[in-house]
Image 1 (tube, one colour):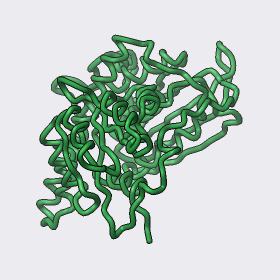
Image 2: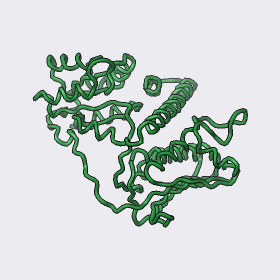
Image 3: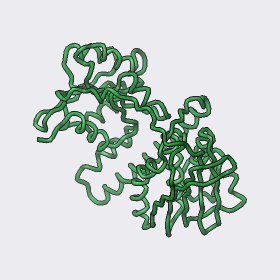
Image 4: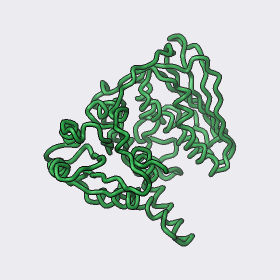
Length: 357
């Protein structure tokens, strides 16, 4: 979080072209490292407890439209043509939205990484498999391709088609492993076809589901009083509960001129501070080391009449399906997953606390 965050701050400073290039390199490298660490964490969590996966009816087409915006920009930077095609009458399947997004992220990341020129096409359609009607998502690229002898090893942990002295691309070799495990956990199938130097097609299929509207969890944000918002001339007063000094400094810098921010290093200190000062809202880290954790602090605040309905934003590295829903059920009004960009945090703070006048 610290490396990504400070690089993000530097990008806003007045730098020379050379300095900007160096900062961009730090930022992109830190994002790649963060992605690798998150992949390893996801892998270990799933390996240890597959029951964490919570399957619900979801619109795959809607999820794809949200995910591809980021990758369209990456494709444009490499002068690649990017298209999305929907031929789907029923895009609903029983899945974990979080895990499905991870699968698509890994596949798109690989497609852009291994495609030097040409195009990338993402397509969703309905079809028939041995198990019955399915929703099929296919990703076609004109990239490097994979030799037939390597099509089996690409699904193994920490493996790539180019390895050792011949390794040409950065990456942990976990993306496709996780994609296959996630797909299997959601009762789906994933497979690949490829022609070396001509491109690849990765296909994911899930049994079709009736478009039943899932029950919506109503978080505290739905009942927050409008009196918690401020005009642009009046800065909201927030308490950031975080035990890591680097993150304390970073978030305070992110929010300078946006709001007044106090910091509490422990849950116990947070409770004591909010009894002496009336805060408009809270940024709440979940893991606070010894003592009270962020959820316990949140539940303690909700028992106080003055904080029963104020915004409490969970700032957390939790990523599996159900984590966000659990935090909302336990009293948080919003969730912001680490690592995040300055614009993500500032945008959320402004949307919750600051009104335009």
